[in-house]
Length: 157
Image (cartoon, rainbow, N blue to C red):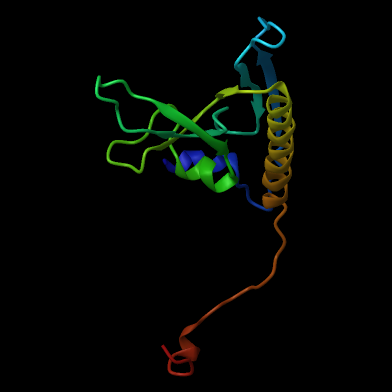
């Protein structure tokens, strides 16, 4: 990723802290026939990503094309701060391992219980992402290291 993307999760200790907010919108399939509906669709979209470079916080893996040449991607997880810096938005990079980030997770489940549990887990993961990004920006001075010409020959190389 370009060096400008690092602004999403890093700041110097002298600048004001970055405020993060990630808002998720939940959409569900609404056509349900009791005892007959076989699948339930959950679509989660990032509608606000304050403090981030972009709203693409859902990690996907592009799968090999099928025999007809159709390309599919599979949702993997919510990104970590490292994922946000490592993987491109929108589509995998040419020649990459196939991972990329999107602002929407589109998921299908066989039960509403699993769907609701997934929604709860995604909210927890979002909360932890905001917490971690915030903590990463609270830097404290740990060590000052210096080396000058009078020290040449005193330290092993």
